[in-house]
Image (cartoon, rainbow, N blue to C red; front, side):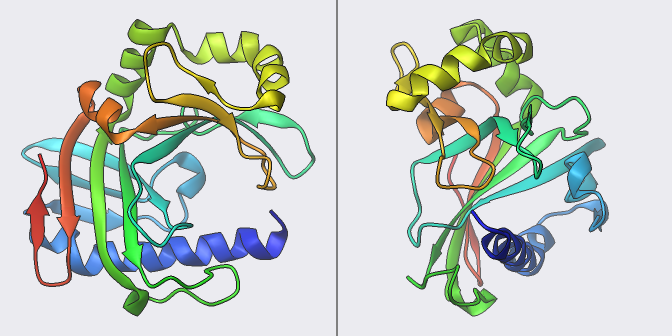
Length: 216
């Protein structure tokens, strides 16, 4: 992924954020809602209070496909601009994220790296609010995957993954490297069913312009 594509990804995420600000967040009774535009590296896109609980949310969008998909990735390792391996956002301790808002868009089938995505291209967005800590605990209990395991085994994983994805035991989720991206991230590609089975999903909605539907 070159710099132009990286910049376009940021622009596309801003379009998704605008859609959420217009059609998702206002439908809830949220207090002290803030979109924090300069805290993305801290893993914060929005924060608010609901039912006396503080939510610090990192919005994650799956926009590269024009239809709603059945998986979402968890980034474990990636390359920085100097080509050095760094910790991905899922385990990075500097991230203050409490929840992820995973988003899948149903949109016009344009090439979003050649044409500018706009809010008018988005027809609906599926959202899933995922508790980061609960998901991390689930992966450790279910598969023995945690931050230390990834740090100690990344070389072996990356070597094996040169031959293709590795399925997790008794699961449709898998390790995979996205070699086509500049960051070449090592991810766990996790199915929606497994997110739900983990107990980490606290809410799930389909967001239209005129309404939302509760999917849980």
